[in-house]
Length: 219
Image (tube, rainbow, N blue to C red):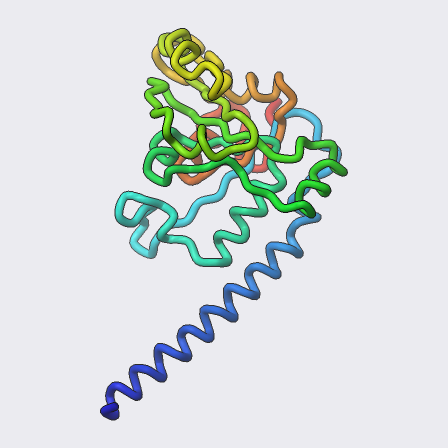
């Protein structure tokens, strides 16, 4: 190897060691955060959101958000999924990332049961049109049927097309062609799903709900 090649290899090796150590530290921190994030004894309706941006403010790379995350980010994302009653995701993210249902191990399932939660949280897909392909992993690779939160206009057709694959909810308010965030969250709370984990694409839901904010109870 030339001197420059050896120098570059050394820099790359040190970067890999630092990145591995940082990821390990972040994963340990996610474990430490579990008790404070679990929020036992919650009443009412709570929203929890997380997202990642690049230094220039981009929320995706190559049209997907997953490429921006580090192992530590993914550990925190997994922890939030583990603790949520339901994981709310935009339809665009489901298509782009080809989301599957939540996958949890035996320990996480036991901890959820001890908190009075279902073993696995469902994925709730926010979609005005309900235009979702049957072969998406969210339908084919999941233990629990996803929830489709759609508009009044799209709900009847969605119930017919997605029968046996998903539970469809009409989440419109005044505008029958739009999904209303407050109506959506109220509908989920009405079926016992009070702690929502929002993915990157649905962060705006938390900000747009009147009287609600991230980690703040709805009135």
